[in-house]
Image (cartoon, rainbow, N blue to C red; front, side, top):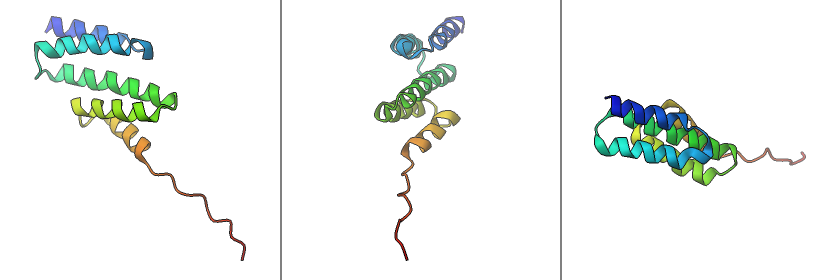
Amino acid sequence: VLFRSIHVDASLGLDRPEEYDTAITILKCAHGHDQTDRLVHKALAERHYMHAVAMRNLNNVSSALSIGNIALSFDPKHDGANRLMEELTKVPLPPPSQETP
């Protein structure tokens, strides 16, 4: 349990976009030790979600969608990831017609 906690704490401390790969590598190590550990699944979902939000904020919708889906694969009930995916997949309405009577 201590081993798992160290991995999770270390990875979530790496919260900048440029630290994403390192954080995921650390979490994948913990996941490799026990693929059924829900804490590790939730941490993987959270870190992927954090990066998906960063990608959305940089207007990289394609990456945000892809990474958001990965987040949901680890925690399908992740509130933030579900809201983000809903936002990203919403089809914008066309502007109102400018016809004159």
